[in-house]
Image 1: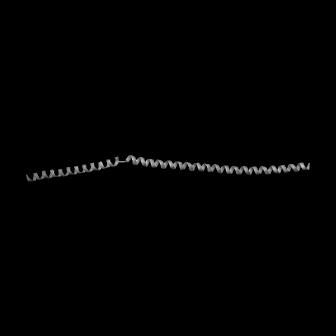
Image 2: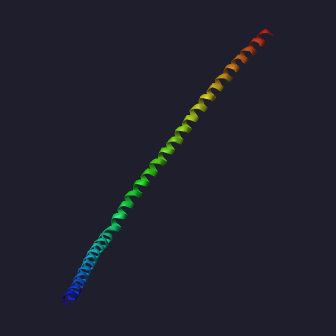
Image 3: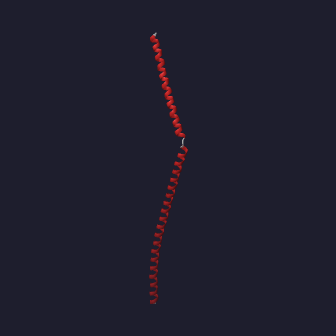
Length: 114
């Protein structure tokens, strides 16, 4: 019978060790969960909203600068076209003036001969 008692005591001891391990892991898990919950619930909305506000402000400034750059490019292209057009018109006017002077001189010569 002493062997039978020893077997029972071993079973009880092993059950006690297993249950104490389960209790310890449950306590550890619950303390870890409590820490996670605390971390997740503290100051998260303000940090996120501050980051979003900073990001939005940066994005708005970037868009405004991009729009200003594009408008400046368009104005520069328009000014370049206007300068080129003006130069072409001046060349054409000079040609016409020269042709008209020549034709006026030719008419005078003809009139003078007659």
